[in-house]
Image (cartoon, rainbow, N blue to C red; front, side, top):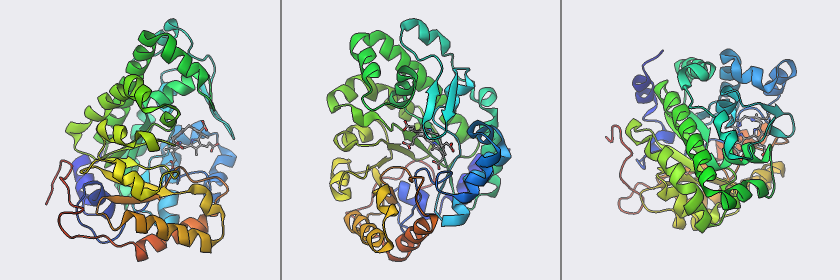
Length: 368
Ligand code: 1CP
């Protein structure tokens, strides 16, 4: 295993980690949520011969798929190829990733007794294939690796609904009708997520992203009561590791302030919120990431170009802005468009370095 601190030191001066820490840098960093898999023909070629689970559980394949978008797009950060349900799958909860659907749970969680099926995660052994993937990646990656995990609410939504959902009715039914069981479930999931993220960092991930993809289904009052304490426990539980913590969810315009308060160093802004408005909702000292609408990338380049410029204008050269989509890459996206987006952001994105307006306290580590 490569020394994880040496790996992080190697990447510390790159624009992605400097932006996460609010430190001056020359180019606006850019990466894309769901950049691995999805749109790339080279990913589909691997998937023609292997199931999703086989790719995730074979370190050489998972590392290759993680590297593909770095080679193709020239992004400033990579994200581990895995899934938010991988840890619970490793604990023996029957989960299948169905092509075109997403995670499907064999026996959904509906009662207090179901919680007995979730034991604590021993990340080194339960997720040994993930740790081996991280070990391989940090040796060869030219850019920092972002580790990730699902936040408790989003994981609970899959376990309780049994698969993807639009209304989260069963999840909310448990939340409102059996608060004790709800908090016990969230507590167990928070422990699993924290163990997974800490292990990814121990193996050399330079930053982590906590995906609370479906938290936007909640209003701020319910988010604060039923979700925030658990996500806060995870983010707080990572603070001693001194890696930037990114916190993102879809349609979370009304939750941005709370998601920052949960302990994030950077908050991901969904595409529905104008980025300047999103930034106003995020407290000073916390960076922001986003937020080109993914579907715009299905349009002609002239439209994409105009929207990329709009995102850059709204970010206003902030030293703590990381360019990204406002949710994941859509499968039908032409990779050539994403390549052009990266070029445009690197060419035209400017970072203001004047004091006062954008500088902020660094996140742990070497602040020099
Ligand atoms: O580049 C990357 O991001 C690749 C690694 C990755 C990540 C970070 C995958 C591979 N999944 C995820 C996170 C993930 N998985 C999230 C959070 C990000 C988001 O909001 O998009 C979520 C909600 C999931 C759950 C999931 N897994 C879905 C969504 C289902 C739904 O409810 O709408 C799907 C389709 C999957 C399967 C999956 N995971 C990853 C890929 C490439 C795929 C497609 C599977 C295939 O190739 O057949």
